[in-house]
Structure formats: structure tokens, C-alpha cells
Length: 213
Image (tube, rainbow, N blue to C red; front, side, top):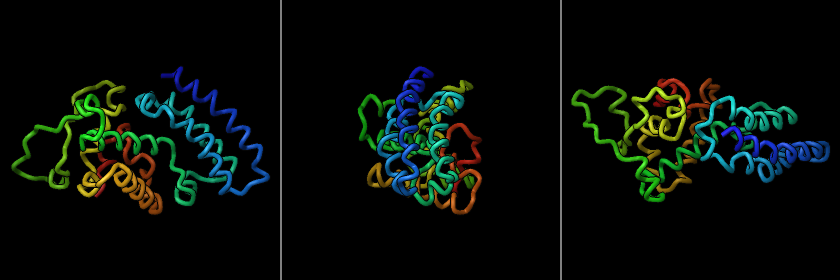
């Protein structure tokens, strides 16, 4: 995992440095567009392969985008709300939730779909606020009984987040629509200065953070 991230950093780092040298000649909007076209695509190219890496390893990728924003004197919130550049951690979570969505709909490769079976647990007779709010497409949470950190922060650990999403999200007609709803909700939380806006969908944070109602 660390070797893969190192390879990405070695490729993206020089491109970012070259881009920042042009800062005096371009507007912030132009710099954003160039960053998304030439650097961001490299940082996200292996999201599926590195998603379960430790926070320390992933921080090397996040540092590059952080450096770009510091050079432009932009806070993470401003970059997201004004230029649609979400933190890499949030982008990774939304990307992998999109994968789970496709598997739940049976639109991914059959072998991938097998990794995310439907939950067979019976509905509780006595409903609670949480159970009443849960959508009708619950998946089996294979990581729920595991203490392995690597499993909890993997796409399998992300199932617990997917299971807590609103019904209207999982009823989306396409993965693009599904991910747009995730992004829009993050934007609403960001505008409201919610402290959890950037990691609302992360499997690495406490359970209560995901209870969006």
C-alpha cells in the first residue's frame, strides 16, 4: 500500500510543483481547473486500491492537495463550496460508496456484487428511531464483528455507512445521481459549519457521526 502511494506522490508531486509556478499568471478558477485536469486525476487514479490504507499513508496524498490550497490561500470549505473541490478523503468515501451502490443494484461485475450481499437479519418487531429510518436495501455488514482496523476502514467497513443513508439516496436511478446527493448533503453541512462535514461518510469515525436525519 505504501509503495503504491509513494508511486502516486512521485508522479503527482512534480506536476503540482510545475503548476504552482504558473500561479502569478492565472486566476484561482483557472488554477483549479488545471489542478483537476493534471494532478487530481493522478491522486484519485488508485482510490480503490489504497482506500483501506492507514491514515498515515493516505495523508501523503492529502498533503499534496493541502499544499495546493495553501498556495492559493483557500480553506478546504472554500475550495469545496466555491470550486467543487472536496477534500480527498471525502472524495474517496463518495467514490467507494458509489461502488457499493452499483453492487447493491447488481450493476457491477458479479464477483464484486457477491462481496455485498443483502442483509438477512429480520426486522425488529419493536422499532427504534434508528431502525425506522433505515432504508429498505440493507446490506450484510461483514465487518461489524471484526476488530481488525484494516477491515473497519475498508470498503467492507463502509457498508455500515451505506446502511444508514436515507431511502431517497439508495433509490437513485444512477450512480451519478447517488453520488450527487452525497455531495450535495456534504455541501449543505459545510455551509452550516457542521464539524463533521468532510468525514460524514467515513468508516473511520464513530458510528453517531453517520446518523444524518
